[in-house]
Image (tube, rainbow, N blue to C red; front, side, top):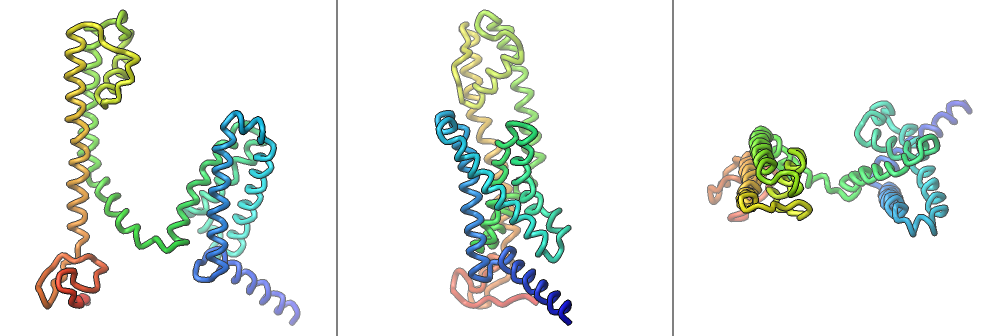
Length: 279
């Protein structure tokens, strides 16, 4: 009987931990997630600050101690998630489970491979939990529209970049022949670098054409760059417009006969009448 009571207590503790760690429907669960997000931000900030030489020299030891403190907290959190999860293996193999594990591994790897600690910035991926904590999952539908539009336009954009790559290689070969090593175009790969910098309108200025013909080609390349930049934007915009149209609800308002409402719309956005749900 004592053993059964102990088992019930263990199950109750595990259930309470699950509600706190995995849930956001309780005050403790919400506070836990908010504290976790703050810890993640502070932990990543420490990694960023540690790369500044003056800060590293003056506060390096303090940062190292704090970093190990965060590592201990995140390791304990990961173990607790495995303990109280209803499906530990499923959690460990999930996106969040893998990220949670990777967020603590660099600290331990740094004991054997110096420099690995800077990969701790992967902890910033854990901030995706903010969607769950602050009930922002409903906004992911808009993100899905953008993602689907990008996937639908993938072939067109690939063909576009392939065509641009051919143009870059042709212009690079021409500039290598026209300008030559005396003007900085020492090789075709170097010319490719100049062409990409010029065609994207960045223009670092470390390599500049010295001949009249080379300058004329450079001017043409710049004008070509402005034309090229607009193409992928137009492709993606068109696909986004189509995806938004596909995501519209085909229900028709019984009062004003307007259709094309949002999927989750309850009232007509034209006359305000309640929309009928399709069975």
